[in-house]
Image 1 (tube, rainbow, N blue to C red):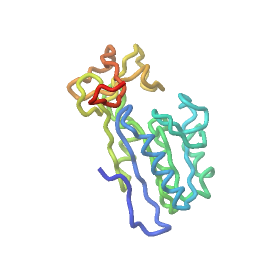
Image 2 (image 1 turned 90 degrees about the vertical axis):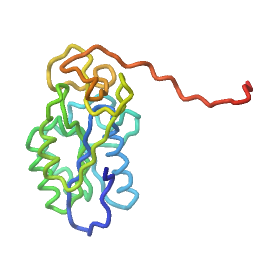
Image 3 (image 1 turned 45 degrees about the vertical axis):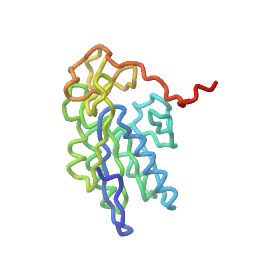
Length: 209
């Protein structure tokens, strides 16, 4: 897994794609890279689709509640003007944009910008989730992240829907999805099978209170 490119000359643009299933840490990784670019003195703009309002109307927020201020857009082509002064453009939840995002990403990268895109690569039925397959194809750098299967504890890269909802676009979190390994994935909808996770506690070998 390549976390981040390095030793790239200034003024040369490129595209990085962070993909994976639900709860794999995609937004967390996007935020990490954005913060590192900001520390390096680069102008960073973070963008998210309007329909993703799970945690905040405007901030980009991970499941671990790390957040960055973001721009909210209705369509991908709005990004070209809104990020004109940016050196680094971070785009979250790419699967909620249409195919225009492919042209926008290429346009921005050809303009010398570093483009970091995070999104689901498969939908709740295990099918490639456009426009992510096309973005993966044109990206210089790709990182695939995995969650932990709530049923088996194995590596998970499927997003199991656990609510009776058949629309492909469903903005949800733990109330609607569970991460599943291949052998535990039952599309399109399955019952919830995750077990409560007990908190990590400090061990006391001397049984001291």
